[in-house]
Image (cartoon, rainbow, N blue to C red; front, side, top):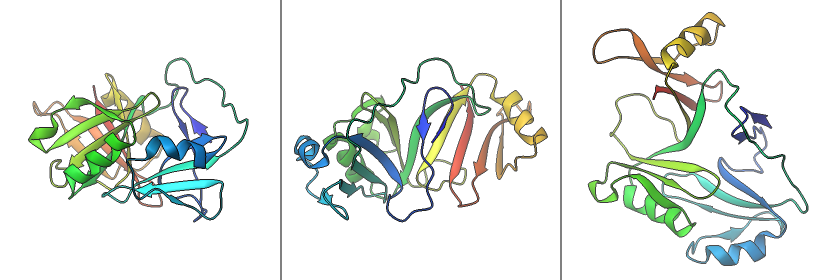
Length: 196
């Protein structure tokens, strides 16, 4: 696991865990009852896993991990990228994707669903942003990690100085330099570094 002090990220080369949001619980089959609205929730490779996929191809997985109690992640971000904001998803099927996450207990907290461009949804643990394909003008591979920080311009400069390759840069509208950037992992996933 990796953490910036506010968000825990698990990296895996295993095909066992699908890319998306994973909730650890004592009994996935019991918890799945709360997700009855997700008609495609199906057993995984055993009774210890239930998963479902939204219209963007991103999975919601319930994984058995009895008696697991992660350490509380309290405090401020300690990572170079700033504060983790959301898991961002781009999709051609905007309404279906938003409906999926609503059925999983998420609520729209930013954006207007009726405009069909983007919304940010949240449950008590994580925010998920859903973007209609073509809404943003930068490269976007689903799912992406999105970070916001007031001093992102300085953070991007530091990331470059440390030798981390930037795959795409966005200049400020008033031409005062690079204020936003996209990092790309070796596996092709994106991290968005945006100025708050």
